[in-house]
Length: 349
Image (cartoon, rainbow, N blue to C red):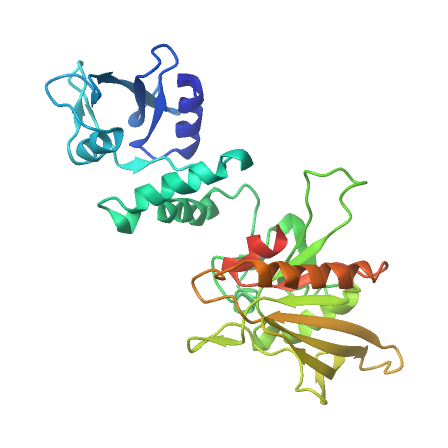
């Protein structure tokens, strides 16, 4: 990585005293410590300045100059995380936040995991390795480039399970046929999701990512299912986990029928597997009981709270079953995935 590339990465992160260590391109065997300072590069409004400090390898030991030498780069970094580095100019440089990129080439994934595992075993286990990458992803919310104003409107706040997880305005699902004189009547916390990296001929799959239903939103949910002509629903949480409500049941007990808003839902059959439950539902408008659609509802039950499955086979089999079902329904609308935040990326990837 060149100095310019390091500057681009650090300035994009924007957090003063974020740092990374890279190999020196001009002196193979040596390294460079690149640190984002808290001072602008030029004047007000310009990017923060990046300082590059050479790390020399002399006799198998590492140093930034002076009398202090270290057995490894990790030892050097850990030392200067506790003690500021004084530059020749007299300015002090602090190492506060390592730069952990959450993007990595597929060919490098094994080395990346080994690297993060080593970091995890260092002294500061609470804030290292995978934890840092997770925190970086969590903080991406504040960098959203798309507006989420609809979900923040007073009349819609009660329809959101979490106040900080809101749909983007440009891609939210809009409930059709609602009274335009009633503020917020067309709102549901759900977004269309499509892979924009693929061309229109390749990209045939569209999903809807929806929050777990609340009591007040079950009727809206079934209207969305009907208007989008959805035939497959995927739910990746239990209704209650560790005593906390995750999703209101939006279907009746097996063999029962119930009205939700403007629609009637019948639970015709349930099939249990080791990892998930499959329900066969029939939905029809209350004002036209002869118009019936069959819906397949997949509920994954084996994703642990605040964790990941111990082996991927069950998840992959679950996804394969869903894909096979959707492929058998050529005219069906988007798959709706009523997801927990922790599983959304895994199930939409």
